[in-house]
Image 1 (tube, rainbow over the protein chains, first blue to last red):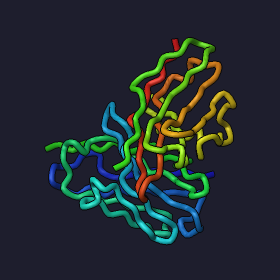
Image 2: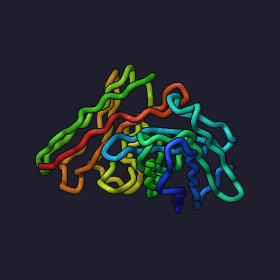
Image 3: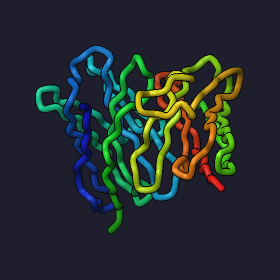
Length: 120
Length: 106
């Protein structure tokens, strides 16, 4: 059974850097075809994709946020970390990590999400 | 950048068929998954690769994709189908989500 869980601060001061951790079980991020992505959702708004990391350490980023994002993985610890710099109140929202299998071409298993508020 | 267009809202009478569209330039050439999101919950994939249902998703959910429109069809709509629905594509090495459609079952 695949599970993912996001963790990190609930409150971030503007201009600070956000670091979120996705801890997962039930799969290995060293297995061919496996990816983990980050998606966020401002309150009452649509889903927005942020970043994706592949089993081979290839990485993809949202073009509009690329300069602020870094995604890394720790295969031995079953974790994926997302950092986002220069946080702003518009970055407030729920942040999800999700498992993606290339063969499905979809995010098939999602974490519960973690709410991040950016405020002074 | 690639854009996906969904209607903000769709209403369907209980037991009838709902169709939610997702418009994009030549979207028929791409693989489209659909996600269902109920209030306070994480999204759940209900259709992947245009027409495939994951295990546990009722047969009432089906998908199609051709030309410039992908469609999620929900037959015999139930109250429990009320949710936001999102389409998504992979374009130029990036993931793109549609703006979401709120389905109301009357």
